[in-house]
Length: 324
Image (cartoon, helix red, strand yellow):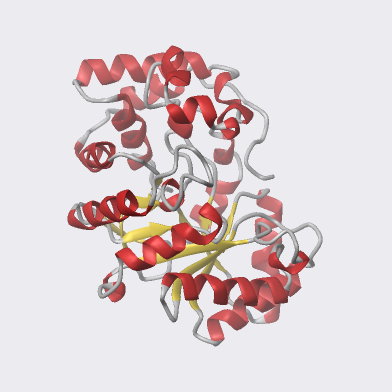
């Protein structure tokens, strides 16, 4: 395993972050692992040197946090744990979602209880709240740091102008800034390279992209995507513009390069991320220990400048996706 400093936080994290949406309960989504398999996945991740885990209160309606907390029991201090807040947790409680003070405080407490922890390492806003002033949100997040409920706060998919506004608001009020950005970024969706990623690079913000494998579309030939359980049942994958623009040709070039280097397509897609200086740790979500091991092996794959250029060349601008 390789390690890096997460932005300017001073925290050392593995170059791979295990995304925890893939376990909790299959009652939530068909392809999600239940508790026993989730515990095995986390255990293997730790054996492989992964110390960075990203979950959210809404994953399996809280079960992901509970399973992760159980898996990390007794070794919490060795790990870096991130969670997120924003999406509605209880249809009967209008204050269980959004980024108002009440929602942030009560949902953070609920997350910590499920995780069995006193403090998160990183609390992220899962999306931008158009109904709450950013000043209110940043004050509530800063208070969470002051109360020892989280060490750092971070943002997720949003427009670069919104992220800049949040950082300016924090600075002007003497509050803690967002230390990280968890944004949508992969070989098939590179719109973040226009503004968000240069902004993060300039100001020392840690970058932890979600969906580095384009919800599995970069892990197999395009014509085989629907053959998987997730491909069949994950309606979110079809909402993203992976199948638009030059997506099919990029997929084919990943296939070609993987065959040339005798590795798997997913490993090429991850190796491309590891070669991007502005990426600290892509968030890899998997339901397979074998695929997790493959992801770690991808750290050893070297891509030449011409390899990177070959993979990127077919890309065409696509519609913005992931901010909703």
